Image 1 (cartoon, chains in turn blue, red):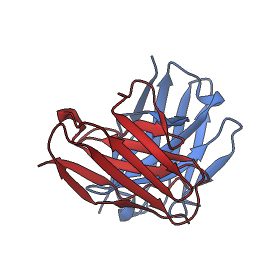
Image 2 (cartoon, helix red, strand yellow; image 1 turned 30 degrees about the vertical axis):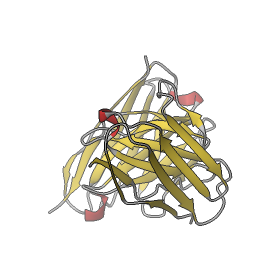
Image 3 (cartoon, one colour; image 1 turned 90 degrees about the horizontal axis):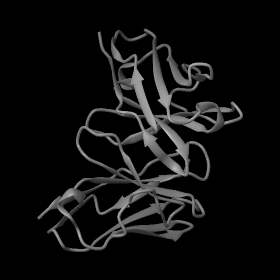
Image 4 (cartoon, helix red, strand yellow; image 1 turned 90 degrees about the vertical axis):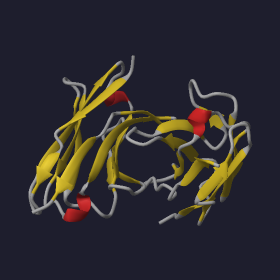
Length: 115
Length: 107
């Protein structure tokens, strides 16, 4: 059974850093595309970053230079390192497997950036 | 950047009625468009990929059509569990932008 479990969210001050984790089971993260999508409170969905099977990475302009997506194949886990956090980064962050569409999603982890 | 515009913003219908949701892209996304359903407090759920292919486990009452810049999602007969927010997503190229969503509410 495919499962994705995010962790690492919380309350952080502007300018701070957080690392989100997404533990996968039922498939191998290194062989497929994986993405992070966020949703600000009461708002729509925004694609944040993606890593493909070959390890190529892409970022939304809003996070480029501040966020880094990576994976640990030995732990079958996806990460999102978030630096220089801003108030506007406040959102629920979801990880997703991207096979044909984003076909499996985690439950989301809330990141709140506030002083 | 490709902008996806969904219409209407809100659709008020009764169970058993047909729902037709629209998604228009500012430039061609070929057939690389997906549809998702999201209920309050839940992650999005993939319904349709590549414009017209139902994802695994999705009931046949959901169907997608279109290509290029104009797409639609049709729910042939609304069930109580179908009242939710629906998003389209371009997948032809990064960034994978989403439409702003259509809320299907009970009339």
